[in-house]
Length: 120
Image (tube, rainbow, N blue to C red; front, top):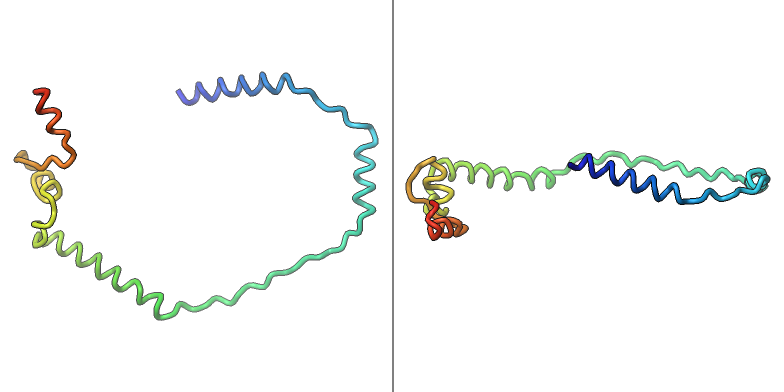
């Protein structure tokens, strides 16, 4: 569908460009331009940038990663251990996570709409 739309846009663009006129360029315009460029002083002002020496990574750069790694490890351990499941809603830790057909919390309320229509 998108490919077909691109083709129609191409046709419209070509139609608009067909209506555009090509401006007339005076015969000596290019020669005048090149003469003006040659007349201007061409000073070579090239500034070479020097590279900064690479800084070696300090202690604090690596020290900030330690709490992040510890937080990740603690989260994985608590999630795998199951000791913090009482904090999580049952949609995360209950029947959905266990692939169970039991009662599951309906966090979005979509189940109520299906239950009212009788199409559970």
